[in-house]
Image 1 (cartoon, helix red, strand yellow):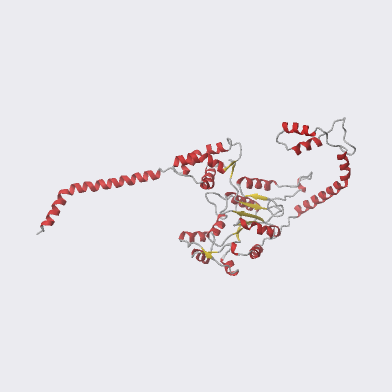
Image 2 (cartoon, helix red, strand yellow; image 1 turned 30 degrees about the horizontal axis):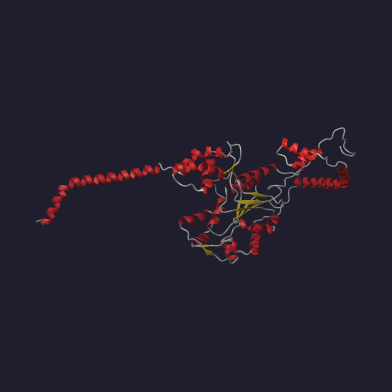
Length: 417
């Protein structure tokens, strides 16, 4: 027999059963409604990329004078940012725009013809020529064009009698990428580039698109290896991997050899280098190391929370270590083929003989100059010339006046034709 209290409870439950069922249904419906609304809101959340696709072209045209002039990536950002922030209700990070949104738009909408200049993030230096190329899109593009065209010395020589003195052909046989730009003065002082005939490229942080394009077109087109010098840590291996794998920011167009001459575990033990503390890596970090070429022992070393930077070397140790790496990988001086040597020989004979003859007539030429002093009204003539052609400099204008053909009333002196 049920107790009085239990009978009361059962009576209440029976009386309220229909109400409780309805209430639970309403609660389930409310939860479903909230979930559905949240999913709809998330799927239609306006992102930076959503708005960027709508405003990027007008922003570029605004920043570039209707597409008639080169424009900095940050100029496009300033033109696009107000609409992107208004459309998303979020603050836009400058670097995210210039390093992600704009490159993605250029790539996906195939507007590579846009003349957008990205900030230089490092430099490339040739051996022997003292030529330094900033690793920005505009500078790298111009350098690649110069390399393709060559730069034979100005002369009246036939094309077959000239030879290139810029770029990989006849100038350098490998391209060295150095993770830290701060090492450039040390490499320059030790004449590494000149002694091994290599170009040296440095970067600030992870490689820029311009940096990867330089490697792609110089190494791939001219069949020279890329040597990568990096720290012994996750970032160093990621830099190595950047040159081996395409990603959404840059897709390689050529196949070229990438040689790892960075710090490895064997260097750490062989040179008795002291590690320092670093973040412990999770499974994803371990996989990243494996993908970028680290051995199982190296993965365990780094994943356990250790790293070794190139900075741990003293300057003399670093130079000696780098020399060993270059020699081990067969990097050596360049001697061109017989045709190039023949062209160079002939050009040097012509240049030497030309200089000898110029010296022989210097006294005569100076007498000619003395016989033609500057007219009193040259300043006025220069002003008129600059007014008519303002893009000239004053010395270009005076050169034109001084070398212009003279009239019959002022014949040239004897010996001048």
